[in-house]
Image (cartoon, rainbow, N blue to C red; front, side, top):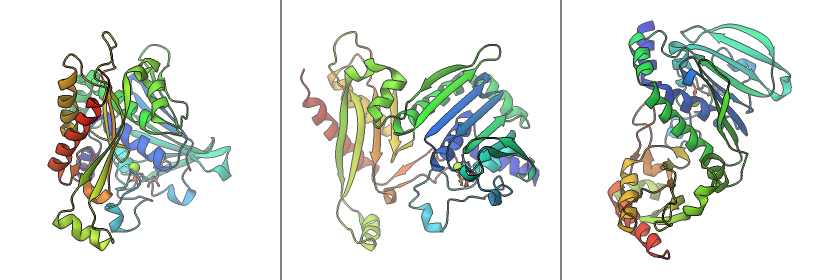
Length: 352
Ligand code: ADP
Ligand code: MG
């Protein structure tokens, strides 16, 4: 049973990036306004995520890391309209199985006395000790994959690429989350801890982008606010009728994109970030359309893209893969054709 648990856990936590995503999403779900992500040796030694969110109440300490324990999913239909990031109750139990894992947590009413929780690999609570803490939760993951030697070696071998992906995803959270102070630091094997980037609790994604990528970025960006219309099809209209709405669905694409003619020598940071309802995700087909349309106006550079696709939760499905990385969009071809037209119109309307 232990082996099966390890194998299944390895499907939720597939790499460094999924650890980071799960922990940051838990902190966001907990209502944090301050999140610090700290790495040791690019995460190979330790990943620590500290937040000032709700904390975890005592009656949940023992069940926290058990498989399928979640405080977030009350009914099955919630799966369809998920508002929180987490919903499976698999992340912490998987991390227990795959690393040396501990949690320090404190409710506002208990501060400055928190609890440090240590767990068995099975997810069972091993011990609790009282420690000094402020309101919030800190999760510490050390020696990821230490008990899966092949996976561990793979991680070490690919650490450079993995690290870049991790930073990319953290950039995305830092930019999309407004009202959140977000900071990322790293301590190399030998050397001092350094802050890599941080945001300041800004009210706009523009200010977040300035914090993360520098003020120069703004000089080349134009606001993105497109509306794509999607006719209801049979399946969706039945559902929508049931919800008292059979009209065409509006999809908004909001964010920032490079102005194609932004002058010689003005280099945009080479970043392309996509979100679905604020959730960072890779959308290669959307990226392709953006890049193609942009190329028609500026063949020599690729654009900075920050695009949040906002749509009804019934029009997509993130549950197709356990790591929630793949996303299925309803009527994607039509959505993309529509996007291509609107984006051309936006670029066309700029001065050249
Ligand atoms: P899920 O997020 O799908 O519910 P997880 O395994 O990620 O499952 O977390 C299990 C539970 O632990 C959550 O439902 C939540 O109650 C609690 N939890 C995890 N991280 C935090 C955090 N940073 N702050 C408060 N509660 C947390
Ligand atoms: Mg979670």
